[in-house]
Length: 169
Image (tube, rainbow, N blue to C red):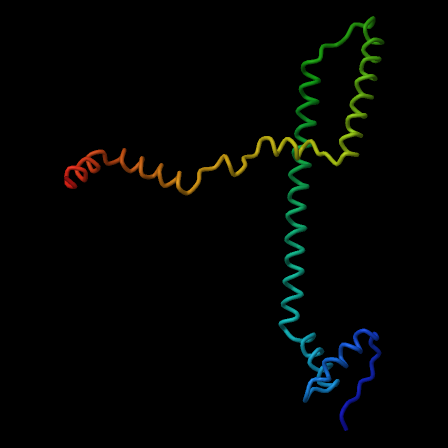
């Protein structure tokens, strides 16, 4: 006696099995068996593993960017604090109230700027990195590289070019 399996599938999937089984020589059981064989095959596992590896790679790259941004932020803050503490002279007691008021005003302005940047989706670190990173227009093209190699080759062997020209005449 053959093993039997009773399963419940969605109406949409059942209709798809019905349509596939309308072909000559194809039964519902054959369609379901082929689907199960595909599901349990090594190829299916490889596809699933490949998708997981791609996702993990993407997460790894995102983590690396976050780590780089955090490092830049930490270094920036440390440099600012060091600069502030070494350059800012102490204030006389008579000027401290005015300095506190100015500091409070500046801090409120800073918080407002920060709120606007965050609400607008802007990122200072990304803006700075875009300013300092090179874009494709700053690199040489293959044609320019070949031209530079030719010039370098002629400079290395100056007599060679003259000999070829004389030989061509």
